[in-house]
Length: 352
Image (cartoon, rainbow, N blue to C red):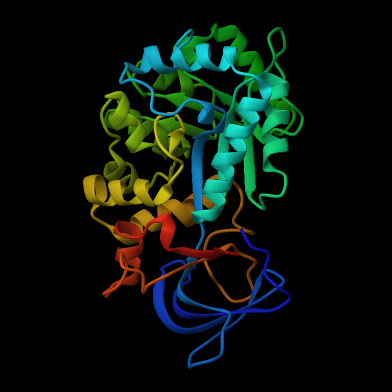
C-alpha cells in the first residue's frame, strides 16, 4: 500500500460516488483527500480503473500458518479441539506472526485497505496482530477474546469476537459482552453457520455484527433486520466446509447491511477478488451490489466511512488503481462488471 505524495494525479475511468458511475477523467489526491475530479486529458502518475479499495469484513489471520487442510467437517476443522486449534497450540509465536505478516502483505498489495479480524490467543494474540500490522498502512478492526479466567479483551481491541454461543457457557458469554459494552466496544458473533439453533440466542445479546447466518430461515432474517444488526457473509468458506450458502439476496431485500469476508486463511486466501466473483456469479448476479458490499458496506460495518468507501470530492479515502490493458482485462467494456467478475490481484497497479 503506497502513501500518496503531497499531490498524486490518477487518470482513466473513475468509479465515482456511492453509485460507482464510470467517469472518464482525472482525480487529484492531496494528502489522501480527493481534492479535485475533472474531465479531459492530463499528465498523470498512473492510469487505469480508479476505484475504492476493498474491505474484508471477516478474516482469521492467525490461521495463516495452516494452508490447505484436508476436507473435514466444520466441527473437525475449527470447533473446540479441532485441527486449527491443535495446529495453533503447537506453533511458535514466530511462525504465527510471520503467517499474519504474509497475509497482511498480500491483502495490502491486492487492493484490500481495511479488515476485521477475529483474534484468538487472548492478549498475546492481539499483540501479535498489532505487531504484524506495523507498516502495513491498513485499517484494522480487531475483535479479541479474553484470556482464560478473564472476561475482558485487550484494551486495543475494537470489539469482542465470539464463536457460536453453543461453544461457551451462557453466563460467561453474557459477562464478556457486558464487559465489552462497558468499555464502548463492539460485539460480533458467529451464528447460524452449521445450524440455526444459535441465532436467536446470539440476537438476545444485542450484537452489532453477526457472521455467516448460512442456516438462517425467513423468520431469523426478519429478526436480524428488525434489530438492525450488520451481517458479514463468507460464501467461499461456507462452500469449503459444506454448510451451504447464505441467502444474501434475501438479506439485501430485507434491508440488512451485508459485508463480505474471506474467513479462515487456512480455507481461502484473503483475496476479495475471488470472493466478489463467486458472490456475483453464484448468488447475486448484480455487480454493483457486490461492489457496494465490498466497499461502502464494509466501511460502514467497520466504522471506517471517513477513511474508506466512496470516492467523493473533499473526502479522505483509500483508492486502488486497476490495470485495464493486462491480458486478463483487455477488451473491458463495463469497468465495474469486469472489476467484480474478472479482475485479479495481479491487475492491481497501486493502492493509495
